[in-house]
Each structure stands twice: as C-alpha cells, then as structure tokens.
Length: 263
Image 1 (cartoon, rainbow, N blue to C red):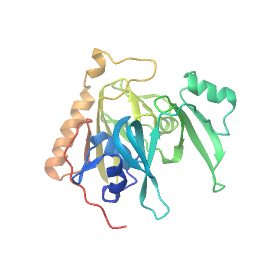
Image 2: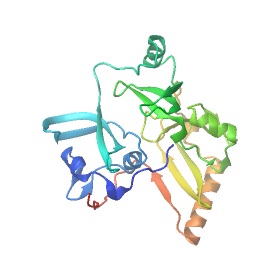
Image 3: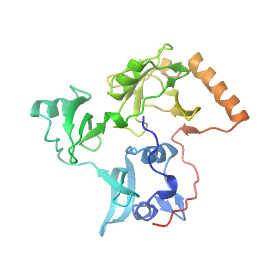
Image 4: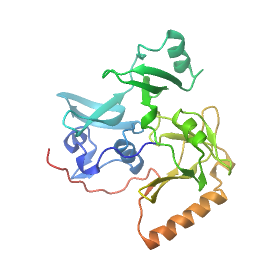
C-alpha cells in the first residue's frame, strides 16, 4: 500500500493514447488501475490494441503498465509484457532466485547499495504474469494505520512493510505485495484501510482483493466484519460533515475526462 506519488494532471496522456488507453480525452482505465499508476504500482494485465509506441507498431499485446519519475520530474510510462525468460537481480543467489520463481518463497528481504551509493533494504518478489522480479524499497511502503477500524501496532506496521502477513482483531489477514494493482492480498474480498495524515483520515475501500497465496476465497471471505460496517458509518458521517478523500477500488470503469499540464 503506497501513497500517491504522481498527480493525475501530470499523466503522460500522449503515451497512454499511443497504447490505446486514451480516446477523446478520456482515460480507458479502471479506477483501481489508475490508483495503481498514481501510486507507482503496476496495473493489472491489460489487453493493449493497435499500439504505436517508441516507433514500433504492434497489433495487440498483453502487458502491465506503470509510471516512473522522469528526468524532469514528470512521470514516464513503462510497459511490462510477459518475458520469455526472467532476469534475476545480481544480488540474488541462484538458490534465492529459484525459490522465488518456483514459489517456495513469496518474498525475500535484501540489504543492498543502490546506483547512488545509498544503502537500503528491499523486498524482492516474482511476478508470474510478467515473468519478472520486482524490487520494492521497504521505506517507501506505507502501512495503513487501521484496517476495518482496528489500529495496527508499530510491530504490525513494520511486518506489513516487510511483506509479512498481519492479522487484526476481527480476523482480517492482510499482506503487502507489489505483484497486483491493489498492493495487498487478504483473506477477505473487501476491507477498508485508513491512513492518518495532517490530522485527518483518508479511507481506501478495497473490493475484489486477491486471496493470500496458497488460499482460496470462500463464503466467509465475503463477510463484512462489524469493524468494517462501523468504519463505513464513520466514513459517511465524515463525508456529511466535511468531504474527505475516499477512494473506491471496485475496479469498475468510470468515465473520466482528463487534461494534461504543459510540460
């Protein structure tokens, strides 16, 4: 779960149009995919048609997309197709990369030195949809302050940032991941994460969450806990008093007209 690091007004609309995701000034992305882009995460696998990108014409391509900061600070578009062969980071041993590729390990933590000579701890995962290793700086992962109204302890926040499974008192289990657009897996199909900022609270509504690895959603997964229902009431009361940021990650497509800042 990461905060938004890009502004919607700075989206590279020309590049998005070139891969068929903008038509008549409207972005053809689901709300959850847009949130993923603005937060620096990858979208779900998209079916791109009639691409004209980097002087290359492609009839169709299944790929994920993401944004990275460009040289001038504006976001630049990245396309992540499914690669025939994976390339592991040099700091992983053969045994470590094999464990991630086969699923024996969901993630690994490594202390590395980046290209700028800075030490950092990263979380390494393997995305089977694109056949790529994903590296996440743990310091840039934002843990929620509450899940379904239940506060997370400092220990739980630290575990979440490390990609470890945590459980709150209503039985909801959550785990951070960079391999899907929501940035989480859970044992429930729906949950509400709350983040405190500047004295206020921002609510993130997640629906259609992927199950924890090795598990499947069942009838209990769709049950909304008492904490979830109480948090919904708090959101409604807050909205009536003073509108606050609420993002509904239902995955539904919504009509959105975009304007782009001059570069």
